[in-house]
Amino acid sequence: MTPIQEFIPVIRSWLAIDPEIYPDDIVTNWIRMAEEYLSETLRSRYMVQIDWMKLVEGRVELPKDWLELDTVRFYPQGKPLIWAPRDEFYTPQYDICNRYTIVGNYIILGKIDTVTGVDLEISYYQRIPPIGDETNWLYQYNPRLFTLAVLWHAAAYAVEDQRVAGWQQAVESMVDTINTSSQRSRHSGSILVANKNRRSFG
Image 1: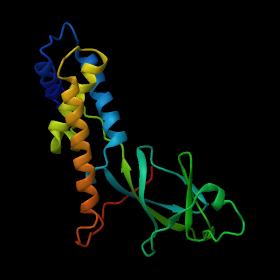
Image 2: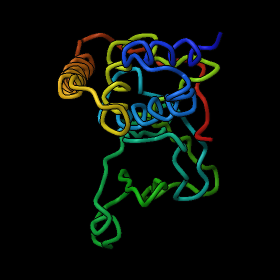
Image 3: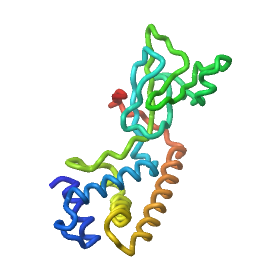
Image 4: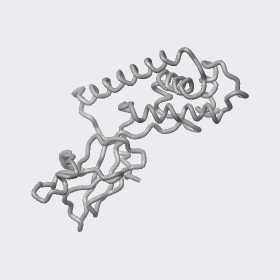
């Protein structure tokens, strides 16, 4: 049995509904809504991914699953680059050697060596991978949050349940707690060692 096949009956048991009323595809839709909402609002350390790519041009498309950048730097040596607003980035009098900006799904760098190229490393918050044949970190490490988020969305869009306000409040509270905890963990004093299994942006 796959993780999503295990999860769907859990949601049904909370709502006391039969498969004939709300089949698997409907419950799966509630799960996708919850994953989308939590991707937009949650900033957990489990969402952070590190990618890199060699640049020979001044811009490169960001990963398809990126939500928010954490750090940008030249690899293997280099201090984090500094984000610049677009109007400043494209103003000639500003020094943009160690600056970057974002345009749509592209990251644009100030000045790079277009002959030898540069290795650009980013750490970023990625969308929550959808649970399916494989599990995801949300189901593994935050099952209570995941379950309540699905129940809240089910009650908000389909199933009438007087517990919906409590589910919403619990989800928002847990999101705030996880976000605060993850923010604190960034300054815990430990030296972080980069994972050797780095992947390119694609």
